[in-house]
Picture 1 (cartoon, rainbow, N blue to C red):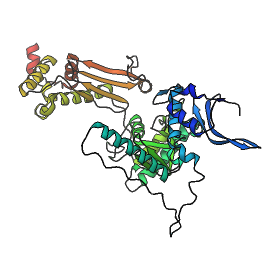
Picture 2: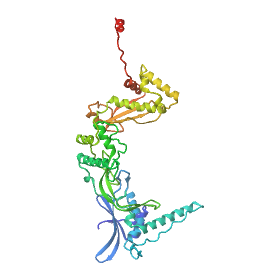
Picture 3: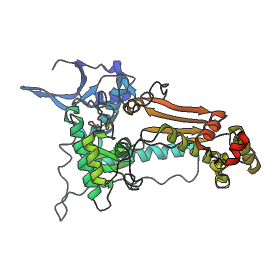
Picture 4: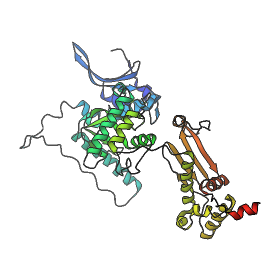
Amino acid sequence: MSCCSLKKNTNSSIKEFDILKSKFDDVALEDLEKYRLLTLRNKANKSNIDWIVWLQVKVPYGTVETRHAKRTDEELLTGVYKSISDWVNILIGFEKSNTGKQLSLFGDETDDELEKEPSSPTHGEDKSWDKYYRECNRIRKNNLMKKYSFFELCDLTNSWYAYHEIDYKHLLPQSDKEMIELVKEAIVKGTSSGEGHGRFDDFWWDDSHDYMTRNGALSNIELVDRVKSLIRLHLVPYTREFHVFTDLSYSSWEFEKKTDYRYWFDGKKIIGSSWNDDKDLPSYELYDLEFIDWLRNHFNIAYKEVISDDDILRENIKHYMSSMLGNCRNQYDFIAKINTFRDWKQFKADIFSFMKEKGVDRSNGGGSGYSIDGFRGSYSKDKDGNINISQNLEQRISLNRDSNLLRCSYREDDVFVFNISGDEIYKKAFDLFKVETIRQTSIFDFLTAA
């Protein structure tokens, strides 16, 4: 083996390295192209064998970026050294651990007697508690090594410091059509189940509130958007072996052998599970006319045109006014009131006067507004108030609506359809909800005009 053995003094800052050096004749770390190979070995003292290798672990190089953090070389090595050194005694002695144990009448091996933890101090100095916790940790760790094997306690395959060399992305659906077929299969299974929805091992269909069908007719955009919000597919299954998780105090939790998944689909894109590489993961588009026809037939949902720009603004103004009026919203019908005034200024003065009389605080708060057909509404009551409505630019272009709009700063694929504040809110409310009455003319009008 061509490698460079780590010198004890080169890693003195990592105390767990010193523990490993005391257990093995050689702790070698070989720098390869994609990873480091850590080898723990002892001299064989045999003519035809030089070394007995106890363990080899692939360790990624530092500054590896994951969804959670960037790790340095030292952090990754420390993680590996710490995990191995914690349980190294049962790695070295595994071939002797199953010998000489007394069998029970049923043929099962009896466990080594587990130590009992000490009673907690009732009083005294902090040092008493320090000693208590150290003793508890020691006993818990020893008990774990009596109950479990090295590889059940030392997680070298699914931890943040492990090297995940296999790229599984080629096992994902290779086209929108393939993904749509998986979504259809999940919908059929979910809607055919006893509850008609649910979270199953390999997929979720989270329609516990009949979100797909409760509003009757839907546009194509809204139909697909609702599917995206309800579906989750778990993809690329693998077997996760039985293992034991321990924390810093050596409290432990067992995890039984089960099928796990390397990725999941959130309705739009693939997300990598655990520590899998999440770079260059594919996205999928479910907006497909054949799939939309299938959805309409499956759920019996009629077609409806996409809401107009004026109507989406009307609905968001309703949300804003309802929130601003608070608990007094049922005492002030702002639409009826608008139709009693000559202009928006009278309306604004009246609603402000009403809120002042009722002690309603209109100065802060906000939330999501009315959102449908790809429109996203939100509002804020801070300062003079604001109503914000955005829409995906590509959807807007497909609807042949004005797309020469300001880009949304916090959602790069969206544009602002409306972004109104202060007096403009009351002007728009007055313009959109004011009903112009047409007075019928009579013969007297003509005589007067003559």
